[in-house]
Amino acid sequence: MSVNITFLGGTGTVTGSKYLVQHDGKNLLVDCGLFQGYKVLRLRNRTPLPIAPVQIDAVLLTHAHLDHSGYLPLLVKDGFTGHVFATGGTRDLCRILLPDSGHIQEEDAAFANRHGFSKHAPALPLYTRQDALDCLPQIKAMDFGKAITLMPGWRATFQPAGHILGAASILLEVAGRRILFSGDLGRPDDILMSPPQPAPLADTVLIESTYGNRTHPKEDVLAELGPALTKLAKRGGVAVIPVFAVGRAQALLHAIHLLKLGGDLPKSLPVFLDSPMAVHTTHLFDKHPGEHRLSAKETYALTHSAVMVNSTDESKALASRHGPMVILSASGMATGGRVLHHLAHYASNHRNMIVLTGFQAAGTRGAALAAGAASIRIHGRDVDIKAEVVQLQSASAHADGNQLLAWLRTMPEAPAQVYVVHGELEQSDALRKRIKHELGWRAVVPEHGSTWPT
Image 1 (tube, one colour):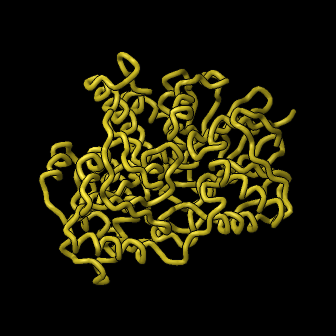
Image 2 (tube, rainbow, N blue to C red; image 1 turned 135 degrees about the vertical axis):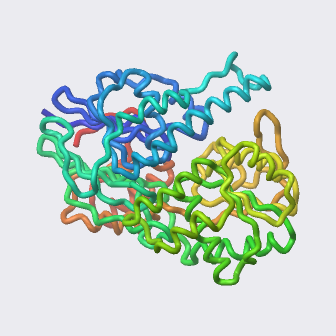
């Protein structure tokens, strides 16, 4: 019998990754991500899957970012009872990320109800913090490099992908087929994470394409961030840096620490990490030393070189401080969380700065800021953007087009088929063309909801 893949997310967009693998009456879901960005995408989160969650036998997670794991609480709430297989790092991060996601959704719904700007009465969260807590016991931690049996005839092996703690590429073996899911691939020259391992032999490959049409600049994040924050410090402004709480926050903390050590920034420049999720994630680097580049001394500095802001009152108190100072706060695309309150407070002052640190998905506030929007809408009102907006080109934790191709070239043999996923259409199609013309391999960009053979 054939093995088919249905693309339920992560196609034509960098969010919502979900790949349903079906064979002989068994159903496996690889990744379980939330859609983010444009409303038309976010509405997919509330559209039932084409398969009942109770019919899914198991879930595999490549890593913990919400665009790959954030739908899991809803899947369990709606009836999924099987195991979720992931690395130890991914399990640890999901314990932080998923309850926080539920909490933020509850807060946003409550705020919308208080201020009456939702079209729904009442506004309801997609899932709650308790829903997220309820799904966590189903996550089972797997070791890197060790093949595990998911169910009779189905095996999976996780291998390091760089990118963030716990991130993996997954080789799935079923019915004589070898299907490789790249997950999000890190950079071989990442400031924080170890490089991805070479790709194994596979018949079918699903390759991410977040930066499929891009080449990262030769200058590193220190060369970009240093001058920007130096300028900010001299004019006494406040830098608001929207960061992904997992990965990007720690990379920026490490970069600022190195800039201070090197004398490029004043050591007295106050830095605040205002995200409980990011604070908890930062402490996990001690627990997973083999996955990142930091020495023990640098890992210690990661948790001691900034003021760790936990409570809401501490976060609100930042508004009464004067610059210069740097506030790192989630979320990375300014789609929710505490960073919205900081943007609302500081974005209208020309002395201040908004530093964007990575890919901004279409339809997000981060994308609007990157495009030079004169105002953005936050909590039902328009906020004028007078602050300087700086977009770092070198801070991404994703492999670029050349690095994605280099990873594919490490495969012992050419696969029979490559599916280009997890990218905006322009990026995905650019990578597809390069795979076809430079490698001579069969490659397609699947449509959302389509089913293809392996």
